[in-house]
Structures are given as C-alpha cells and as structure tokens.
Image (spheres, rainbow, N blue to C red):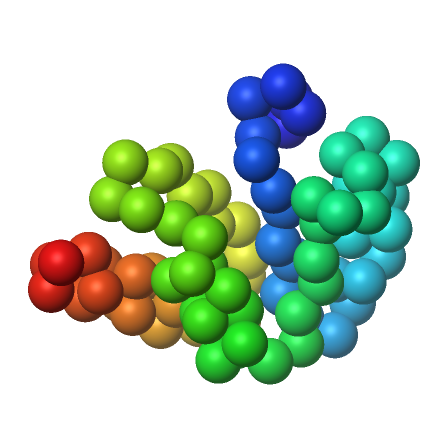
Length: 79
C-alpha cells in the first residue's frame, strides 16, 4: 500500500496486531488501528468511510469479513 494514496489501515483478527505494528512504520501510528472486535471495526469504518471511498478487504473466509462489507453496503444504500 502506498501511504500517499491510503488514508488509513485497519487490521482485524487476533494476530493482526503484528501487521498493524509493521504498518505503523510506513503510515504512522495515527493512521493504523488493529481490531479484534468485528463490531468495533464496522463502527469505525462506518464513521470514516463514504460512498466515494475504496475499501480493500483481505482475509481468510473464516474471518467472515463479508459481514463488515454488508454493513457498509447497507449504510451506503440508506444514505
């Protein structure tokens, strides 16, 4: 990811803190947050994102990140 083209980085999962720590070196601590709670991740994304934003989801099927995506889509459709 290019820091000049990326506003912030969110990671999710019990081991995501390691990815977040590495991302902090490139993006700065204020632009990186690790989550272990999917509801908290969803709430932050709903607060920070608009319909014009591009959000990249990367994870295993077991993480069920489609639930977060569905929440974002539902919110955008209601606005």
